[in-house]
Length: 303
Image (cartoon, rainbow, N blue to C red; front, side, top):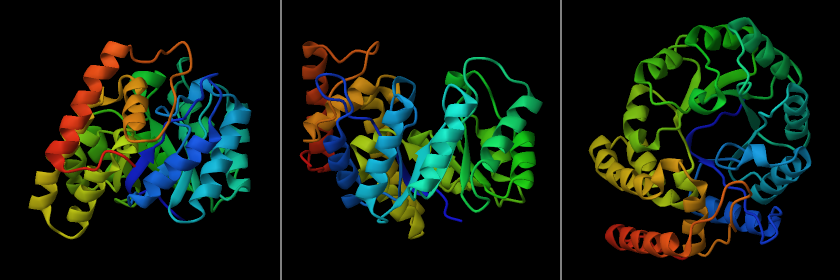
């Protein structure tokens, strides 16, 4: 089964001036990322404003990315939703359109116990063919539920298509526990892209990065250096990753991602309410930060 690896992009969802999904801009963003050497695409997740999208919009986004990628990189669709019924519908749709796999966030907002969490994932995994890869997605600071390493082990042993986890909380010990699931046969990608090199050396397969949706270049360079066995070079290049993650406010406000993409010539539009765009003053100051970063690291700004 295919897996997520390397520089996996948590994609933003472009909107037009009427806050409708801009599928033409989504195609352009997909091309931009593939041409810069990313390994996998991951639309409709947290960075993609998933909870602001209808099921129908999410399906069309998935179709657009899969069709545009045309097999040039792995495409895993995030299918976690507010209800289990919607999650399963999105999972089955992802399989039907030829996606390479799916990611599924824990149930959100309302608390679930260990038994409920495990049963949820087993039902989702059973809703698609046994050879269609499923990644758990754990972001407890947003979803209000957490996946223990014990649960990850049970799920990986119980469902052959649950092949890994995307973990987006900066807990090194838990990360190590995930890496040890199934005698280190469990795929782990971490969302802490400020520590990409460190996570790779721990045994993670890569990162799922929103910052790399805007500036894939430094992340691709780190991963390439690491895979070539040049750890010292990867550590040095990592500084550029840390700096751009901080400039992009560590993913705390996707309006910075979208503004930065506009500076790069990718019109990702604005935010869908209730989230708001940057003010003119904020955007002007931010643009200078982006220009200074590109000049410092010799990155061509425009796509």
